[in-house]
Length: 106
Image (cartoon, rainbow, N blue to C red; front, side):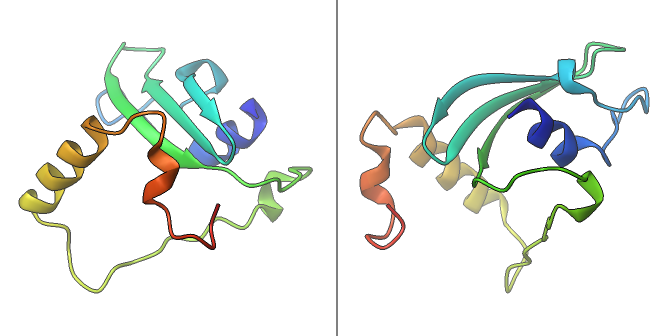
């Protein structure tokens, strides 16, 4: 799992000191089937980048260059209100969070 996360963050660097993230920069806070809650911190300067929800599938990572990472763009930019709404929704999730997923995803 750490290898997949390292690949995911391999092209990113700290916005403060420009150091690259490594495996030690990523801490898994919670793991459920298909979902990780991670915390990202720069190991060089200590900048805290907060928590990220990462959907993971069972792709075997042999060569990081072959990993299909696709950026999905929405029809319009995310607004401040969208972020606040998402925060409130996520804050109120409990152990039954999967009930909010479409039935064909479970």
